[in-house]
Length: 202
Image (cartoon, rainbow, N blue to C red; front, side):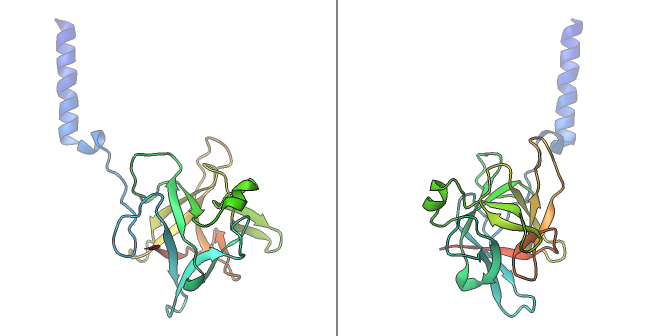
């Protein structure tokens, strides 16, 4: 009889919590990342990462500094030189929508057969450049170890910013740093955030 009463009280308490504090039972999904047309950005779909020039007179886009995707530096250049990219969550999910703050792999969606044959991927990563004497964004990343995320830019909600989230060890949760652009137009971690938008690659 006592066990029945305890179970009954436990059920009523859980029901009360679920009714009074629904967020404790059903966590709300983070906001979806939206493209330039207001549509939800989809995992695996091709997009151009575009950004305004410093004087707001032209549109720039993310691309690479060579003709081959293998081990190329990621740079900001003119729109006609842009290369499409895809986003995929680091942790696989049935949700096809890319959401703010989710850890992502970023890949260039171009001809990569030669890269893969050589054991190199078109995935973004961070490496130290002896030429530029600093860390830059390049291709050749490894799944799960090269995490990025997308968040709203605080100063202007019409733009997003990319951040790199380092992971030095399997269970390390290190702080994310904004991705910006240096004087040579390389994408670099730890710089002032680059304001970006996502344009579907038709």
